Amino acid sequence: MSNIEHTISSGNVYEDMGYEDSAEMRMKAKAVRVLADTISASGKTQSEVAQILGIDQPKISRILRGQFRGLSLEKILSFIIALGSNIDVTVSERHNGDSTDHFNIAAAH
Image (cartoon, rainbow, N blue to C red):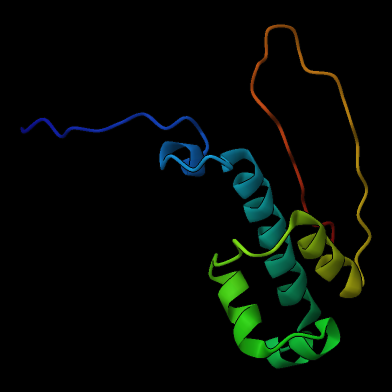
């Protein structure tokens, strides 16, 4: 059996890859996951969604494939709202000794 060299993840792939804005990238990735779930639940095509959002279909495709660096979190959330979902924000205190940043977003269909 050979030894395979590996690295234990921090839990944030963007941090592991050395991105300076890793926390923001992780938040946007979670929001895009909810956007994808929202689109899927709607039964609409990417072209129909693009028309609702005022962008073109190739841009929707790029976003859903993880190419969202030029989009703000606010813009992604506005897309979710435009597709008929509400967004609720809850702020809570960290547990004692927890230094990890937490951002959770989930679609409720």
